[in-house]
Image 1 (spheres, rainbow, N blue to C red):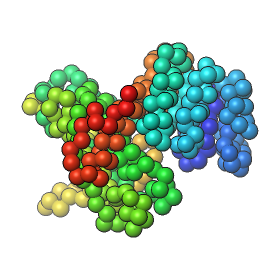
Image 2: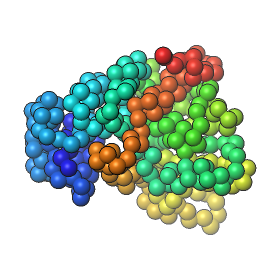
Image 3: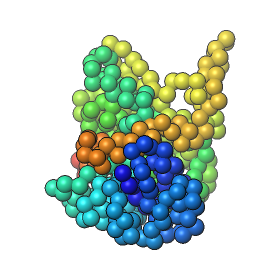
Length: 334
């Protein structure tokens, strides 16, 4: 099949590399507002260059991957849908939830599949955790712990446009908690602090946060995030049931050091970047998209799915600012 890529920054170039290695992808058509980025990707991956999104859609593509700036997501998603071309878009759907809702309403009832990029749904550990929960082998759940710790904060310009740590970072935890447990979040309570980069505080954001999520069956989920984890990129989940407990990310590249006498685990080189931690997941995610394009599977992460994680992020942001519990229904927009 022939796949278009809109946006050739860090993640777009990474997706181009992944797609070029899939047997089902015969050719790529790439476009970026910066001509040099598109030219470099075209030379590296033997791709065709198009000078605009419209030109990509007119180039006979079977599907489109959107890795452009967030502000462009709504318009590009809708352009693909109008052209009848299946689309994969990196999260978020839009910068604001109001814009995301407008996208959802615009695509409802359309027969063009849209997949939003939440790559943890394709990580082998999280897949196994979901299966363990759904099979009942853990028994009834009582506690979930989810962690995302970045090795260093992104630059100031990124922070200023990110929508805040809950929308930029924690939202991955929110999505994977919903996906693994099959439950919805009903209420949150969030806290945050600033003990690192001053520019994060000046942007009105926190660099380290914690959130307690109450799920609709009474399970408690604890989410921990930070922009400062000098040992590496740490993504983990613990799931505790009345029959058994399991963990995702408890492996030799875990960026955590044990001080127990005689303990050598973890023994590997710590993960230091999200692309290192989730290389296989990204490949599985884009492989899934080719199956969506081929019509052999439905979208594994819809616009509606992505918005649900966004509502949780909105609720946590409000809770942090107002120092109180917030229900999801309080922030949800019709």
